[in-house]
Length: 83
Image 1 (cartoon, rainbow, N blue to C red):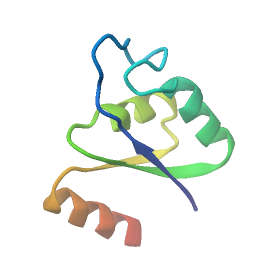
Image 2 (cartoon, one colour):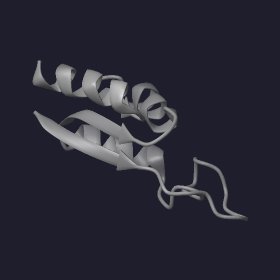
Image 3 (cartoon, rainbow, N blue to C red):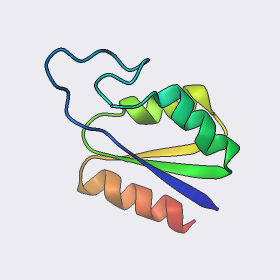
C-alpha cells in the first residue's frame, strides 16, 4: 500500500484559489492525479477542515482519504489504517 500526505499551508493575502495553486502553492488536481498514477492508495490530511480530503475523493475516488484534526479523528484514522 502506498500512502501520501497532503499538507495545507496557511493562506496569504493576495493569493488565488485552489485550482491554480495559489493558497496551496501547488495545483491540487495535478498532484492528486500524479499520486493516483504513482500507485498511492491512501492519503491523510492533517489540520482543521476536510478541504483536501474532499478534493482527493472527487479527483481520484480510488484513493482512500482521511482527515486528522483532533484526537478523535486521529484515533479513527489510526484504527482504519491498521485495518
